[in-house]
Length: 297
Image (cartoon, rainbow, N blue to C red):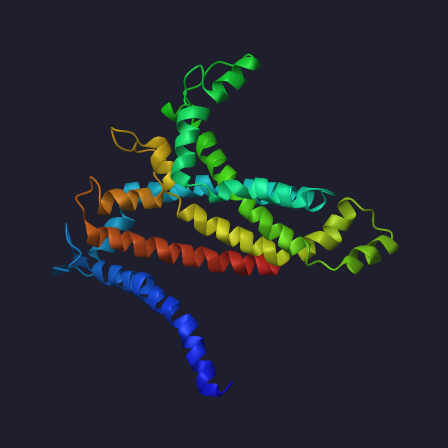
């Protein structure tokens, strides 16, 4: 194939996706960054230039800073739990002698479920707060008292609902990433370790399996961190109701939603400034975590 025909074939396949990425991703990002320097209420058309006033307003807004704190708590729970559980699940499923594809499919299936649907099932069935709810029924078997779960902040049991929803939804996806990485570890490394006297359990895992999973661990941690910053559906659908959204446990995206589209006066300029700040925080934390993990590795 000549160079011109190869280039034509390349752009025929890649061109539509590149155009879609430019039109539906980078143009809105650029427009949002541009809009963040203007006073734009109830409109996406810039009106009065305000410089960095929107950024100063967001960074001194107690609600926005609290939303970053909410994310930190959510990430502290969900990231370690996801990494440990997904890795343990991958090790177990990868060693199942029969029906391995069946078990992979069973654990991966929740990833295909809508976050909204899962959040509503968790809220209305599993942790409904009534005596007949699944969680309260299980508590009753062990002599525990029924709990309100999402209806109380003391103790803050709503975190159990939020974290378990996210775990159920994403565990299978990260399990598949770990299984793919496990299968790329050469078998002769295990044989060499056993020849050198390493036991098949913890010693082999510590000195052969874990170093072989280093790239997958970095990817899983990074994706988990980004996804935690972008949490919206489970928070909004589990904690929100007809009266609105409670002020506690409001993650950054729910804050931006209320600022730009909800009861915050549809201040799109300020909402855009918050989105830019959030994007910069995600990029900065991702870069720092990548460098730290590479050094640890």
